[in-house]
Amino acid sequence: MTVLIIGFTIVILMMVVVVTDISKAFLVRRDLDATADGAVLAAANGLAAVYAQPGAGSNAAIDPEQARQLTAAYLDAVAASNRFDDLDWSVDVDGTTVTVRLTSTADLPFQPPGFPGTADVASEAAAIVPIR
Image (tube, rainbow, N blue to C red; front, top):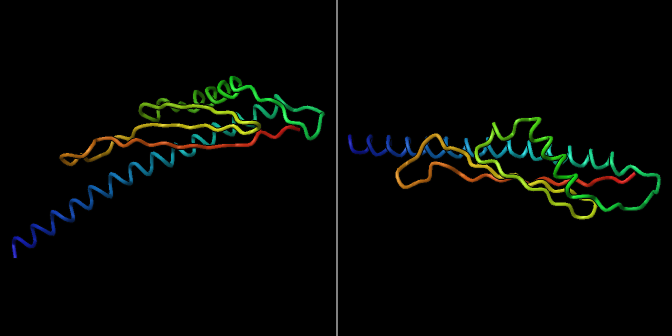
């Protein structure tokens, strides 16, 4: 009976460790998703203001450097580099679409032997820049 109780205790403790680590990675990813959404919307809204023009139905060539500057300004404003470990970001412009990709690492609360102590987390958000 003692062996059975010890076995179940070990299984339950392993489940707690796994669920806690997965929850931490999920929460970091959710926060990274929200930050990526905010960054791409800041870039898209800023670019929409830059490219507001009277010619209806036309598409303007979006400057990738302006998109990067607007994204960097947003990430600085929300102190993203302080909130996420090893934050890396990139901005891609394709036609009237701006895409922001953020990557980070999450330190996991528990590190069982043989398992990594961090998890790589990534998020991507895209927005269409309306040309008015």
